[in-house]
Image (cartoon, rainbow, N blue to C red; front, side, top):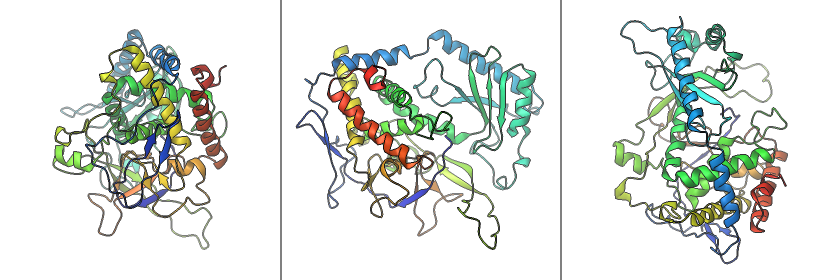
Length: 459
């Protein structure tokens, strides 16, 4: 997900979860006391949902129906699989994709919304060409010049291969943070983004899929509703193609995961203790990417030498589920609901809880971090002047999965282990304030018993 980012460093702390009380129909968020002891991993969050008598059953049914109607049918799924196989055959049969005898072939991996269960029939097909010689990303010494990489990395040459295969609307973008080729299938039915060896993007998607699989009925229903709400209300446009740059669907799903972690419906799959228990090592999965030097906002006088890019190792480790010895128990589990009406009510309550959580979020004192599984207290007081409103709330969300470790292994002594990337760093303050206003609007509308069409602004 392309995004300009800046970082905040912090020490890893275990803070108690925010608590949602239900004395009224609307939850209020209580912030933990600074001296309060952290809660245990196996202790459900001390929060409950809205009273069951709240008139949300109707919109809950609408949310479930919307998610169901947005699910691609088996015919479309098969067409996607056939297209991926066709693209693989084209690459392997081309000059730039042909491998030497006994070399492992290039393979393809689908990532993005299609891979983690939040796709609709018109979703783009995000495809990564996996380089078998670089399973952890770039090799040492390759960060200085990409000319040393295999030709399949050259997106202009890759584009030529698909011109010859009669694909449509082909556009190579070599200067993107992750170089890609945008194209459409020969029939024009499918929009495709193709890159080479974006292992980090694949791991991001795998993490979101793991969260999806822990609560598939709830995760898809809420995720699809939140994505469509943002698009319909006009602030899910990270490229700025249709107006000011605003939030990406990826950022919104991270917000959703953070809320579900805060009410203990989802665990923290990146918990180092979980990873250590299952793998015997806190960082078993490192991926190396190019760290682009930060350019000064204004030209220096005299001009300073341009710093060279370097390799940065990203700890992409996570577990598929909390290990059994930790006795994590899912709160508000859909598996324990035996009737459809109960599921409808749960989904509606969680959606209202999501909007209420961020409407009341104390962004001046806290940041959101799914890697830590809970809101974190700001390390240095309130946000700065260039980080107002929702930017403060989003400051803890990661564009990249997780901690940025100093290459090739662990941070040096005295260096903070984590850096927090603000995925909203390129969103203008006015747009951020608009997003927060939309959270408040959605909360009020659902509390008043509004419909899904009204939430989307369609009625």
